[in-house]
Length: 496
Image (cartoon, rainbow, N blue to C red; front, side, top):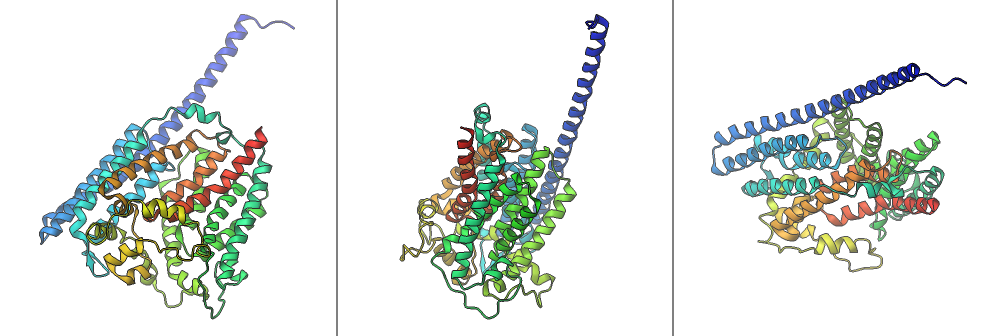
């Protein structure tokens, strides 16, 4: 065989160089398009926030009382801060839709700023007869300081990326069969425990599995000492995600998914329903290294709002055994509970008037000790105390609000535990934790358990912001992450 002459080698090298150049050009074009779309989204959001800030500024000018002028000035300051913050964050490092910073910041802005602008602009300043807007200035100040602390911690550089890539947890799974088999066992075990809890309350098996869509007739629902088993619905979610991610049989994936959704809908809580939906979306787009179009995001948000509104109205009948009963509910009635949900900023403002004046700081008794003791069943600890959040809400709004299940968002919890310092420190710690979580998908493989863990953590951050009750959030995360941790343990043994 004749060796290639110099001219032939030059031609081959030239063709290779042209091919590499074209590929580099395509990658550069895609990166530019992705960056441009990200900037456009951030820019539009900033414009909306600036527009809202200008609106509240003119509201402050036209205010009829000093108190009204004060809280509109506070909202103006808050709006300009958020507009600047997300722009600065984007220019420092382009924002990706499925990173923790986005989930935390978007929900944070919706809860503490957007809801306040809409409600206070139309004069909706009262909840349960209590007007808390006199604390709006101090509330807005610590909303901003808390977010600054979070952003600083989240932006700290980490040099552990290379070490992470060496761990099996961050590598693509090689033996998917073991992971899927483990996931099915955990799924079945979690479902059995959850059903045992609901059956102990008096519900029938078919009623629970149908999501409460069929009436069970007259039913006396009993309190059960096994209430801690209700958290098994979270381990059901992460076990199913492993099945969805690594399984091959589409029929069993769908069947397991429908059962899981039925159980979640029956529970009536919105966060568990949000987790599998957003987890699948995050998994899909992270694997493709892309983001959904803005129109798709708006459609998804609208659909979720509608689903949550239906759940809020229907869950009373479902929990009572009457099934899904929407009779006599018009559009206004459907979204009435949703309007109540966006009142949480008023609870946040009002807490400053309760603690420490009417109730002492908790100093970790609920946030830390309560999280560790929540797992102890009342069947074992008969005198287990009620959550201290009930006492604080009772001081703020009265017993009716306690019975209605009124809760406060995350900043309120940080304040009632450790005061103003607690808001800054806890948001800083949250930023550090979110920075670590970011590494789960930036350093993890597209078929790794690290990515699976991130995909359930990402939507769970929604609950962390809107519900400031650490015992519940801690338990949620433990049950969510336990199936993936078990799968990782078996995966490590298999690698050895």
